[in-house]
Length: 204
Image 1 (spheres, rainbow, N blue to C red):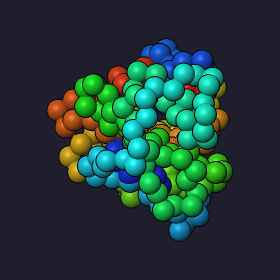
Image 2: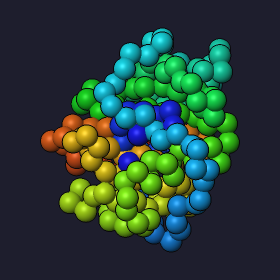
Image 3: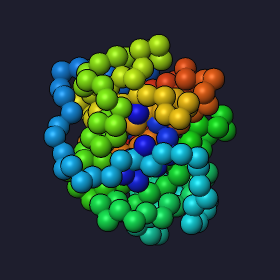
């Protein structure tokens, strides 16, 4: 699952907070929509130092547009986020964040659903698998791709694959227009899966 601005690598954001295990579920009813061929794939590679490091921003009191964007990052990892510089005009804001367990997440907010889906499609195409194949819940079946639900409602697409030896999950959030990529350690794919299911967001 690396982002036309999420170049790290592997959401859903639940209702008022990040979703729990029973709130996010993969589905296989829909396929990946066709998108422009000139889109950029999500960023991949090692974490890079961002342009700025901001303290936690209280929800509901952003002072800049970037801080408002950061409110979509779960509270637990928001203090770690650094703003990413990007040359992709389709991306409005980008942040790279990290958990205490070493999972790195890039959140990219796009200006339109089409540009977000184009970035996802570019990454999906690079993995060379069929849509709605494998299971993101089982690392043994990776690479895998599917739609996923939040509280029973379609929320976006999710791609799970080992990229450069590291388990990576890339996913879209249709409500927020955010494409995210989370990358964990090579030895802990289950930990990455649990993080995506329970904590990753983005949140409304």
